Length: 153
Image 1 (cartoon, rainbow, N blue to C red):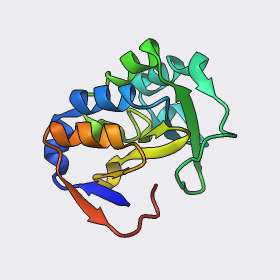
Image 2: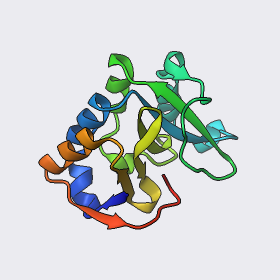
Image 3: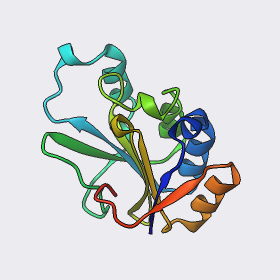
Image 4: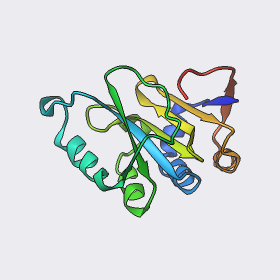
């Protein structure tokens, strides 16, 4: 089953708490970039941010990636101390929106996406495949609404 966060603003204010849960209960994460990245269209912060992840990228072959549209490129990474520190740089989930940061942050447990943030739609989706993390999110006061079907995760 899929769920969406009820109150995006409340969720945004708990960015650090949610990221701590996501990184503790996941092995990998991903985000999207636009295939044709142009220096003129993005801030220097964007490119500096991407450079920090370069040595931690993993092949996509075994991971069930979320759906994405033409023109997007997905990048998957190992969760470790370095990548976790980099993930804490944005101030909230709304920051995960081009042109300062990549888009659509997702976390994986057993190679399956269980959490996805689509910032430009102000949407966060989770599924029950990662029960421990799902319960931890509930403990910090995140409220969910069941949705029957999602093309996003």
